[in-house]
Length: 489
Image (tube, rainbow, N blue to C red; front, side):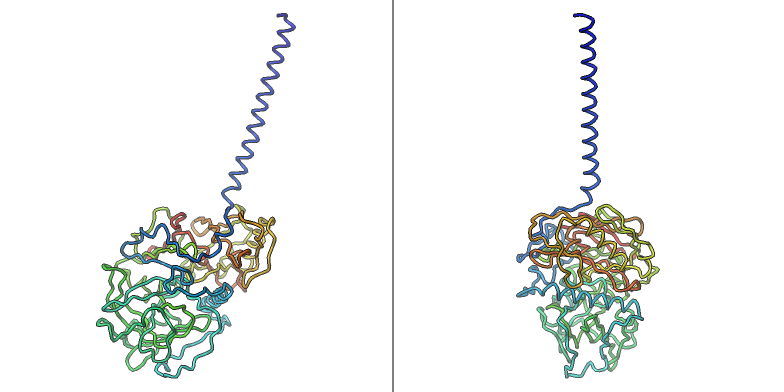
């Protein structure tokens, strides 16, 4: 071979080597670019079937159901779903639930802001024994004292009662015979104090009677020598009765004598067919405080991810997982509710331009009884705008009740939606599930499951839709709230 041929051959191989290396480099750049895009976007979006947002007609217990058959753990069901023992003929329309939710929010905000002009009913405790049920007309809205129900035992012998569990309330109460003024219809037999050998009334001079002011927001009354409580909610539903003591039974070994509760003799409102309410607040009269010696003011829950599934409520540390991130309670805002600090919100991995003062002005609470998360006006506006920008491919739909960012998914089976993340105090970031982002309002439409408050002075509320599929842990004694991703199904 000639030197010219050698030279051409060398040039060819050099060119080939260059082209190969360039191609590899180009492929490498393209591959890295694709991977980078995947890394940047994939974790920040949810892909789901629209039908997963719709309620089912058949109860499907959580796969974790077997694991909750332990002491101090109660099964949680949605009171409007097929797992409820009430077996309603039809769940109330979402518009009614949202109207009741707004009533609850206004009630909470009025309690925290005494200057609020929210109309409140003050139950007349002095007319408790008046048998004439001349009660105010009720609107069609649901009570909004909560949507989740647990069953507990009360009395000796034990009577099983289905109670709404509520972190925004303190006093546990149930309807009691003889219902001297009014009792609404409930599934369980109404509790009869005269049939319990361990029942007693709380006197007007007892310390527990004086604690009613902080537990209910109303001063106690007195009937003869017996303490009388009164508690009302945002839609003017209420319970009035005798403050009492009896044995609370959560399991064969979790028994609490002399548990203080309200024995309701005058009860009005749309409580479904539940027997009353289980108060999980921080007041001394709450179940959390009254069982502190055994459970250490520690409880956790997994809310049902849909109305057709089940969850659980566990008192004590036995049920909490290890995959938890804790944010401190914001004690500077008071101890009547579970206050938390929101630091920032992101949509699809992009932090929203919200000043910290927006969140700090009124503060925020976490509440198991509020359905839709409420945000300060500026924060909600930023969230809605960012969400709409990342949902441009989907046609919009008219507003529904308190929800104004809505979409028509009639031509879509599969949806891709941006992940909404909250960062709480202590730099605790929590990614919301898809079910905590959209709520179906019809068989083809869904809306962003958030709403704005009417005023900057109104407290923000982290609601129960946003808590779905998260294990939520209340370490009340330790002053912190935990979130566990993947701790629930």
